[in-house]
Length: 136
Image (spheres, one colour):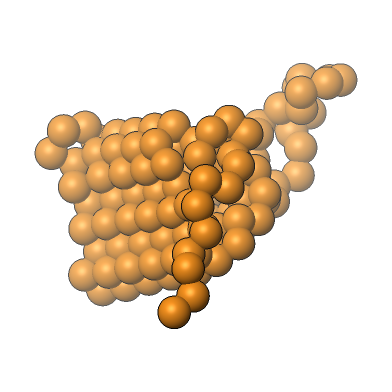
């Protein structure tokens, strides 16, 4: 599902959207996705209104094989949610279960696999809080 005024800026590199059978990719209004980004959904990946994905980002709700044990068994999918007004920097990776809350910012090259509180800036691998929004 793609909302209104969504921008796919694939001038520099193609953008890949892969929804497996039964999977959903939901892109709400006024979202911008830059070139080279890839979104893969077995369950559900949601991009909230006015969010922005930088170049070469990777979002996926399934790791496609376990880290330990039988590598031929597919693990269960965990929905991935990017709430409204979130900015994701270039070359960042959002893993299954990532939930970026309203207004969060992700520095370039960050790997996220958990909930990120609203209004914070995170960076690194694994992600850590770099800055918190100051309430006025």
